[in-house]
Amino acid sequence: MIPIDKIKAIVIKYDSLEKELSSGNIDTKNYAQKSKEYSDLGNIVKYAREYLKFGDEKKDLEQIVKDSNSDKDMVVLAEKELEALVDREINYEKKLKLFLLPKDLDDQKNSIVEIRAGTGGLEATLFCADLFKMYEKVCSKKKWKLEIISISKSEAGGFKEVIFSVNGNNIYSYLKYESGVHRVQRVPSTETQGRVHTSAATVAVLPEAEDVDIQIKETDLRIDVFRAGGPGGQSVNTTDSAVRITHIPSGVVVSQQDEKSQHKNKAKALKILRARVYEAEKIKKDNERSQNRKSQIGSGDRSERIRTYNFPQGRVTDHRINLTLHKLEEFLSGEIHEEMNEELRLKEQDLKLKNLNQ
Image 1 (cartoon, one colour):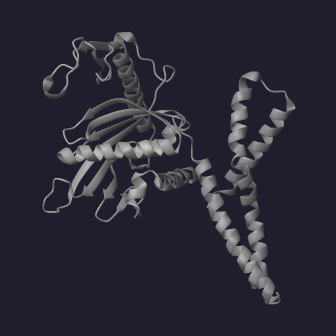
Image 2 (image 1 turned 180 degrees about the vertical axis):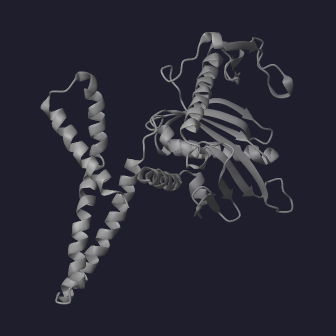
Image 3 (image 1 turned 120 degrees about the horizontal axis):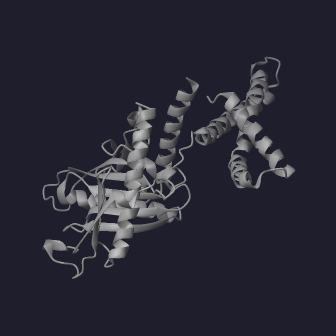
């Protein structure tokens, strides 16, 4: 149950902004910010207004049902209306909970996603590739722009590592729940006795940092150039196009050699480095504010086992919310990814609302 005063606050704020914006007496510096806030509230205020009416409407209908003098047909009709009202109330409460979720300033940012094969040898690299394909399909479905930054392929045709950026609206607010250890259980194509093997891959989702988010001084960077290497140690090209950048204060190191141009490799490496340094600072600040950060949904802890993909049983289980969907193929194709993501957001909402109510 959402505290009524929080619902009323949405309506009051919306009406106040509407009056302020229509008056014309508003500072031009604040106009864009207030207009956006008004627009955001406009998407939810109708649900807030209806939600506030549910209490009185339920009382009226319950009174008809309980009144022994009520007409039988009227009672049947009231019971149906009451059932529909309760369903609407649950649905609206879900929407309002999601809206009331305390805003993470990074939620609107684009993201850099890093997927690395973990335990399981070549099978883990194949799973790493499967995860990348899943995110490709999710991005395509949502009309987000995905761009590969670097990729390292395995002998089996999978990926040892793949790093890519995702651009669009509110990317980090969606993808941040993917950070952690993803585990797969299936029979590898090389398995002759039909035994199920367990492999894993780690996913790290970083908010893409801009220059205004974090200042990285040139003097804090050590930049090394070297000749890009291919399989078996062979040289990919004859120029020193590969770049390794070390952020001396934090010890973060990024290497990039996918491009033939040293300039392009340096730009890509800086993009990843900025995101990693920004994330490290963000985690440090979050830990200072809350000792319970690692127990929260979407904390970004890469060591946490978050999900299991079980092929023999055709299911995917998210261990953070104990949700199992027996639609593995649909999930991997990006069709029902949103369903699990919404449940994760709702769970996080519940946790944060409890903290707010304490």
